[in-house]
Structures are given as structure tokens and as C-alpha cells.
Length: 314
Image (tube, rainbow, N blue to C red; front, side):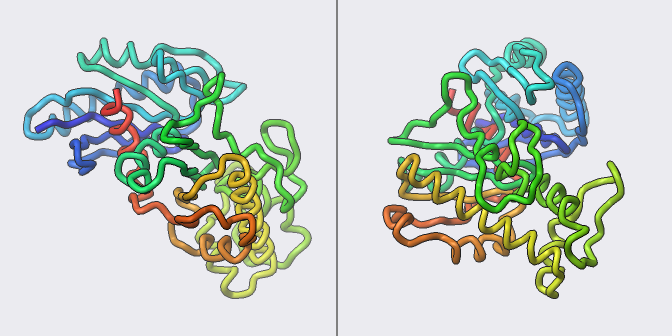
């Protein structure tokens, strides 16, 4: 049985699992990550793979054909180099070569959202479209573009950082990139937290806003309080849904897709999705013939499937 060892490495967790050629997740194990630099992250990845091998073994006692890794940050997938996490954490590492040599199997790496876009190409809406945008609305906000069947990467492997587009629903928050009111500061896990803190003095609310660095606000709680008419949560949801709708319409004008696919924890429940649809201009959206759709792939495991697609594609 042909299998692939797959790693989905994000800001809060690392998932390691084995996936077959049909996209079936055979088993997996979760590891905590947290704030890290690339060198520490590389050691964490290696130690976690060793733990997975020692505690789980290989599925059917058969070593995987190859390894695929989806990573946050900028990745040179052609040369297997993890270039950076963000501008403050830039230490180019030949991660694919290191993992290949350590674990004795071919290894290929890519950015996490670009990996998820690959999964969408193989097992999702890519089966009916060669021109689609995959938008991941999770802790952050980013996208993958497929144009005429080819995935867009850019001259510095930085294409798709749509979270740093400025939209009209800002809350007066400065983004980590230096600009004001980027979309990611309004519609993402980070954005809901930043916006709640910026606006909490202007509106009545029952939302629990943790003190200092004690954690982020709960997006699920924001959605629940919105339904009860909470003033702050109403503003947060309306601003976020308008920002995402505006962003989608900008991207539609940019790359002329016939399909826009939404993924990530912020939209997975369908709550935000329904509100975004009402804010889309029909003239702008008239050529998006397959519509704005939620991914059919499980949002909890699309990263693992993306890593499998990375390994298989090579």
C-alpha cells in the first residue's frame, strides 16, 4: 500500500499523519508548537517525527514513499528551503534535505496555505476548475491562486499574502506589516482579537477579552453573542463579513476565477459564509460561474492532505 508521511506545521500545532494516494488519512498524532524560531522549529519537527515513529510505527509496517511538509511562512518549494516565518524570523534552512537525510525518504516542503490549495486541486474543487482562488480564513488570512491550471507563486514565493490588503472595514488597527487596517486585522482569528481590543471601549459587550497576553478572544463566543444582539460582537461580525466580501470581490477582479473556495476555522461553521454571500455584488461576481463555496475537505485535516499533495506532486 502506497502511503505518504505528512506534516502540517502551524503556529499552535503540528499534525503528523500518514495518507494514502486516495487522500484517506490513515492515522495521525497532534503536537503543540507555540512561538518559535526556525532553528527551534526544525528540532521540534525532527523530535516529533521520531516520537511518531516510536509510538505509532508505520501503517501496515510499511515505510512511506515520501514525506510532505506544509509550513507557515515563505517557502522555496523548488529547492526545499524554508526561507522565513515572518520578517522578524528569517533564517533560511534547507529543511527538505535535512529531513530527507535524517529519516531516509524523499522530502518536499511548501507553504501551508499553498499546500492546502494543492489539496483542493487534487481532491476538491480543482476537479471542476482550472481557475480558482482558495482563501484560508484561520488564525491568519492568506490565499492560493490557480490560474489556467498552474499555481501562482511569485518571484519571491510570496504570492497569496492577501491578508495584507487594505479593505474598507478597518477598525483603526496597525498590522504587523506596518500598514493600517489590513484585512487580516479584521477577518481572522488574530483580527477578531485585535479588533475587539481596539473597539471594546466604544460598545457594550459581554465578550470575554483576556488580559494582556493571556490568550485571544473566542471567535465562537463572538458568533454566539452576535446572535444575542451584543453590540461589540455585532460590529465585529459585520465588519469582518464586509471585509471578506470586499476582499473576495477584489481578488475576482484580479485573477478572473470561475470558483472561489473558502476554508479555515473562521468560516468552517458556515456562520460567516452566509453573511459574506449577502454582501457580494452580483455584477462583480457574474463570471464566478461555480460560485463562492466552502471547501468540501475537512478543515481540521486539509493541511495534512495538502502535505500529501506536496509529496505526491513531486
